[in-house]
Length: 47
Image 1 (tube, rainbow, N blue to C red):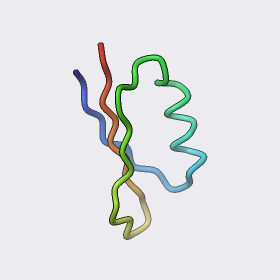
Image 2 (cartoon, rainbow, N blue to C red):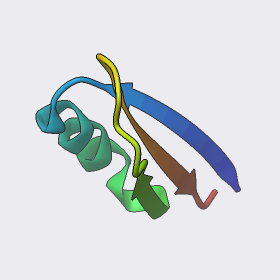
Image 3 (cartoon, helix red, strand yellow):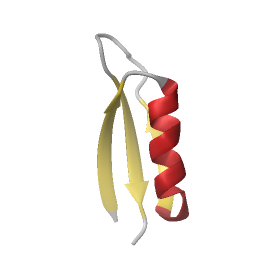
Image 4 (tube, rainbow, N blue to C red):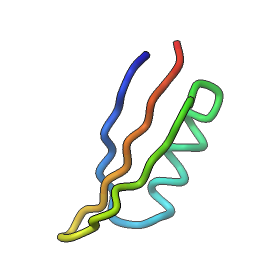
């Protein structure tokens, strides 16, 4: 299991990353508190 923290500015950037990692993604959670310039998402991969 691999955990990744992703910082992004637009939802399109997050969707591009999810599209690339789609075959191995177990979960993807977007952080509740989205303050500041960058937003965060947390992805867990199954290897």
